[in-house]
Image (tube, rainbow, N blue to C red; front, side, top):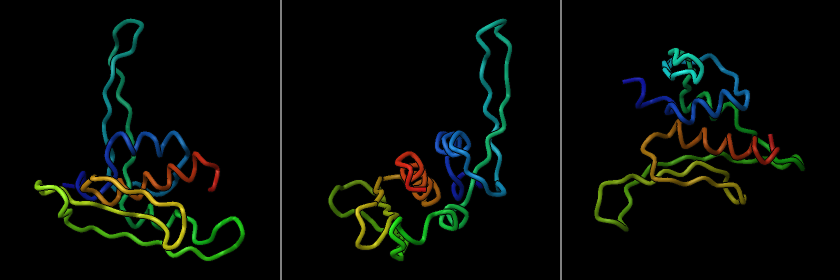
Length: 121
C-alpha cells in the first residue's frame, strides 16, 4: 500500500544517490547479487511522500524570484486508455516535469532530481 503514495524504487535509488534527505516513510528492500562469489546483498532504499518532496523543492529561483509550486492530476482525454497525466512544476517557469506516472510522489521526485542534476538546487 505504501508503494502507491511514496516514490518508486528506481526513483528512490536516484534520490539516495543524489543525497536527498528526509525521514523515509517506507523502506524498499533491494536484493542483488554481488559479482564476486555470487553472494546476495540486500540494500535498504528509503522512499518518500509527495509532501516531503514538495518541501524540498526550492521556492525561489537563483535570482530570488518566488516560484509557485503546483501539482495536479487529471485524466488524459487524448488517448483512450485510463492513464492519468501528472504535472509537477513551477507556474510561469521553464522547469516542468510531466509524465504518465500515476504516483505524484515519484513525479515530484523526478523534478527534484532534474533540478539537482542541473545544479539548480
